[in-house]
Length: 261
Image (cartoon, rainbow, N blue to C red; front, top):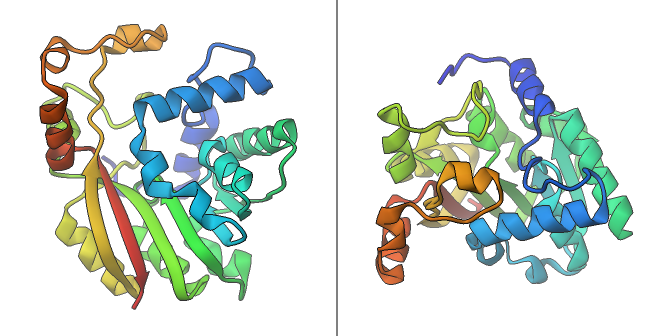
């Protein structure tokens, strides 16, 4: 990956095709489209529901760093959180705003770079700062994490997903058999070890309370693109208990829980 790519290159990449945009073949922006996008996302990545704990944040102030097209965002709002979403991609944020309109929910949406949160949000603080699959795409994760500290208070919960270096997916990428994102050419897509995560979080002023590893994508890509869920034969024939164990050891997603130190 090009670790020196600019914020503008990252923004342009996700503006060209927002993440999960093609999770449904229906008309983009309709209620039916958003419902199908959500169903597909959580079918393939069910660990998100357990990790995000949407019902827990009823009445709490939630900041999502990198809301994308709003699938997790809408669920925080549905469960009664006071929701603020920050997103670099203008096109993605348009869809999140549309999604909230379609479902009649309230939220605050800010088009901004996560490396400048302090300047954007001022002295505000949040009960939860959530970022799923975002910070490994920014030029300086160190700066981004330091900005999270500026908008947290002493009991703020931090929930972040970063890509795992020691993972089935990274091994496939290293061998030229896969790529980090659905579309080619992602400017930045870093992956991390547990030790690197612990160090990064500590330097930013957070204590990691738990790191879990999840998510191996088991489906054949050509079928998946046609909205068919056909597993690769080596995963199809694998007992579910063994597959679950592999995800905990070799999953692509590091699920990180942390608190202020």
